[in-house]
Image 1 (cartoon, rainbow, N blue to C red):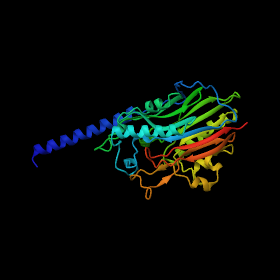
Image 2 (tube, rainbow, N blue to C red):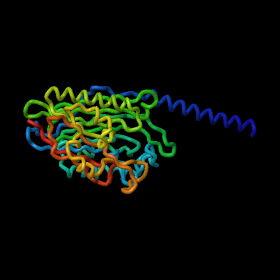
Image 3 (cartoon, rainbow, N blue to C red):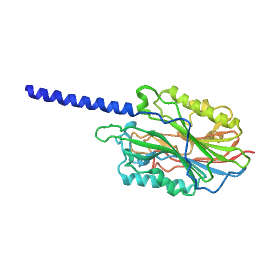
Image 4 (cartoon, rainbow, N blue to C red):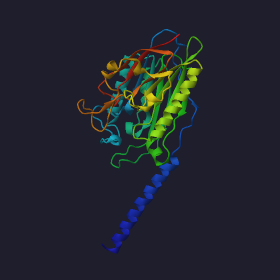
Length: 347
């Protein structure tokens, strides 16, 4: 190799290294956690001021998977191949499909996770706007769960930048809503786990108390066990205080814990005054239902895909659970199936 070519090669390597350093600095310097204890703006559309004792209500939780997960989709972070949705049309199809599934159940309260506002991975479709239109008579509020830097990985199809939320819709007026920042991994792992949060929405009850509706999306398996435990501890402490104040607690979402495992730390760290809603029914009934989440290492295959129930509800003992169902939507529009619960407040 001539001296000229050696110099050109070294110069090219130098430029690449400088580019990598600049990119890493951009990721590090642009990182910041979203403020804790952040009051949330409520979009007020409902005319119903409070909920009543003894009446039956339906709540649904649904992780809509940022509109990417057709049954054929697999995700690169889980060992699959894709890092963005197949197309904008597929995103629109999935979000509209998820919204119609939710609408058909006529929930009084709807908890959504992985709702993108503006993200490379979902072709910049504002997914909340679609749900806003479908649930136009509901109060709603949302909280940014993360606003990530541009992820230039994989090189051939960068995952890009994500502005994503969790959202709540209520047929009844929401009096207040708060975003709480959950503990997350420190060091380099925080750039992979991104931010985590839950929201607490308070809805008036006719007796002067509140229904406290929590919407959660906890860290996934594979993260530091101490962080996962700290998230549960924080959530439980908050719910316990609301219960001590005489309020009613329904906490739903994507817990990223195996809700059917008797060994799971989420179940084992709940105080006696709180229950996983599924535990209030015979396990034979619950085990026969569909599972709420599929693995994303391969396209969905009913015979081969690993499935598990990560989504559901925690309730305080002053909530009477009347029905609890994982709906078998065959993962048509998301890598999660919706979970619904019927309940009433105990007198």
